[in-house]
Image 1 (cartoon, rainbow, N blue to C red):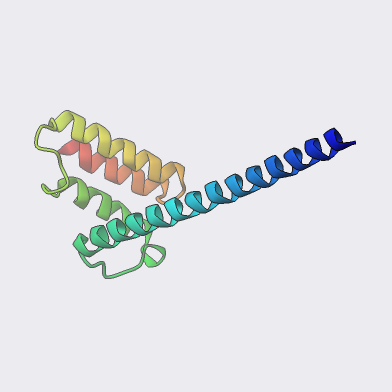
Image 2: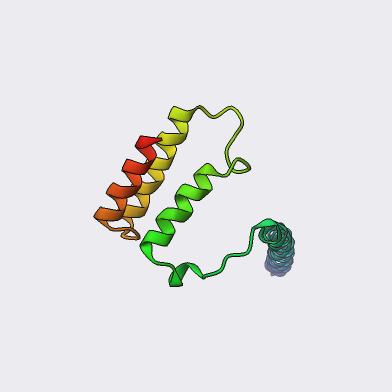
Length: 121
């Protein structure tokens, strides 16, 4: 009978130790996640502070305005890598336009006009 009591006591102690260990790991994970979220929020705020002010929200823009914004962004020298070739720039701009069209953000006509504008450069 005493061996059963000892076994039960050891078993209970091991279970309690496992529960404490799991709680400690969980608390560490929550703290690490919160710290990571705080760092990300700080980085996003710094990035947002560097962005130029927009006159309209994305939802208020027309598809034509969005197309113009994509084209203007592609022409902005601060957003273009120095080693980018004109051919690569055109290809990436065309791919971005295609993405906008696939998402339904610009119409077929707007896609055709923007593509023609890019290809004519």
